[in-house]
Image 1 (cartoon, rainbow, N blue to C red):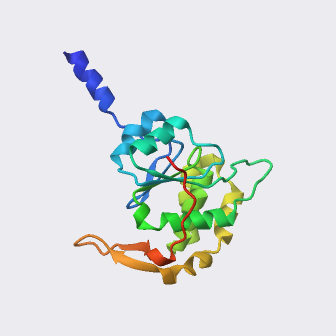
Image 2 (cartoon, one colour):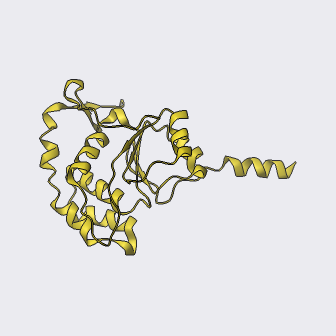
Image 3 (cartoon, rainbow, N blue to C red):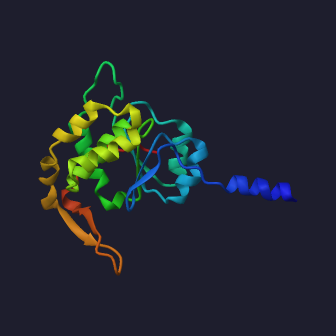
Length: 200
């Protein structure tokens, strides 16, 4: 009987993907989720995933998304360090538009290890949130560790959030919660361009 309880407890464990963390209320980041992470992801009640790699999403992951009604937004950003491949600004800008639209929340951002591409996207989000550059870099380096890339930091530093702020006229602020004054962003229906999504 004790063995059965132990097995049940083992099966009930929720294992997060590598490098998992909460970015903001309703926004999460991680490395690539494996099937062992699916019960944990299910507990987040995700609506969307932003996937920042060019490789096709594995079939078992697609089946998990379909079973849980999760949208997949894929941005095919190369992750090679040598030879250096610059991060496409347009892809980051489009990913940010999806990220700040609360209709896509709760949302998970991930690449392969949750360090460089994910860190670059989160860094650009922080710039949009008016974080000081020192804090943006500290957060990036906390996840990248000794594999921190100067090219990523340079990309974040030079990324023009003004191009995203030009869309602000199409954004309305909504306050959620009874006692909270959290500002949330939501695109107006008539001005929202439909991003490419993967059918699951």
